[in-house]
Length: 392
Ligand code: TGC
Ligand code: FAD
Image 1: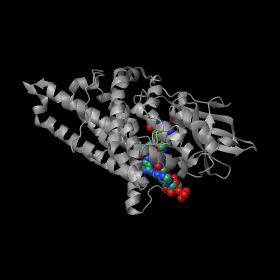
Image 2: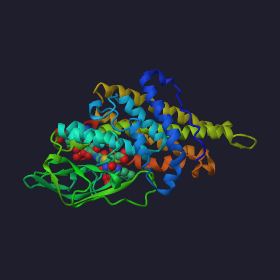
Image 3: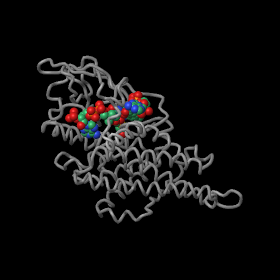
Image 4: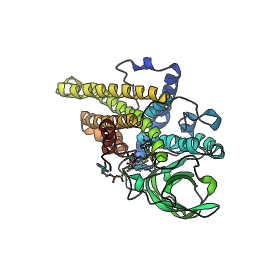
């Protein structure tokens, strides 16, 4: 990729809504992404390789468990700080943000929220420091949008459970040391378990051939009569609300992350429109290109306001799952539309790795599908405003 000349758009002076601490955190992550991520990310994506060497740096900048209390190794920060970290990481690459949001919201969050004190002490510091990476197993080959139908199951064998089944499309799976896995017990109640690499019968085959999130490793989780000690069961939650509660946190982070990807596409397109000349003048002087850029900055600004307000509500513990769902859907769709328009502004150059556009666009095709598809989030809002459940 060409030199990273990113300059963040702030059309409505939204920086004034942030504290000095927020700005410091954001600027630290932004500088780290420029220095460590931008120079290597294009090649990592082209080669379809997860840049493992960045894990230590992610831990050092506080990207693992920013809002987990300090006593467990987390950052003890607020939700807006978490959002800003996700925004800056996804400005670099959605795959990198995926690694951090899975670790924070889908592995550390459930252990902190639903786990025992022993589990918190055993796992959280290692996850915060990046010594261990984790993954989250909810989706199955035949149960994606409808996780309640899962068939992965546990059977009580006295001092341990026997786990059988398979999970699919699992971010971080190929190199994760632990997996937070959701399975049904003998009564059909969904329970969470911490499964550790090395347990007999547990394998994590990698998923190949992705055109999206190529710098993030994705895999399956296969459980063939895995003996899981009873102390690895998350004791403090039962039912689908367990995994869905984790998704609230991850979807919140994604709603900020998508803005990062959109800002990068807009910034690149704006600069290109000023530098690229056709018919004897910069293409940014043509009305059709100005329309695209004007719509982009408008949508980014609206999304920034939406997430900032959501962050305030989340800090006050007042953000509803449906509000989070709306922000995830709106902002990811917004970012994908902007990536497509920015690609056009770059002309032929837009399909090359000289610019980040095509990489963001392809990544966002996963982001609009995972953590609940665009359609599922439309139905969540539909249910919230009408009171009618379209799922069943
Ligand atoms: P439903 O009957 O509505 O609810 C069952 C129970 O769950 C409660 N609940 C929630 N609790 C917390 N947060 C939420 N967002 C919740 N939504 C529902 C609900 O109150 C109820 O509780 P209780 O006590 O009455 O039992 O469930 P449903 O089966 O009808 O499903 C609803 C639906 C379709 C919205 C849900 O299944 C859904 O969100 N589906 C989408 C699945 C999804 O998002 N999968 C994501 C997998 S993980 C992933 O993609 C990670 S990618 C990470 C990365 O790389 O960054
Ligand atoms: P399906 O559920 O089969 O949906 C197919 C289509 O049908 C979609 O367009 C959907 O919107 C539509 N549809 C489904 N139900 C309805 C309905 N009721 N009304 C209208 N339309 C409907 N999962 C994890 O558990 N952990 C992870 O770490 C993880 N990481 C991922 C990483 C990547 C790169 C990808 C691509 C996925 C990941 N996922 C993960 C899985 C992801 O959450 C699912 O792909 C997603 O929930 C959709 O499930 P599905 O792919 O089975 O699609």
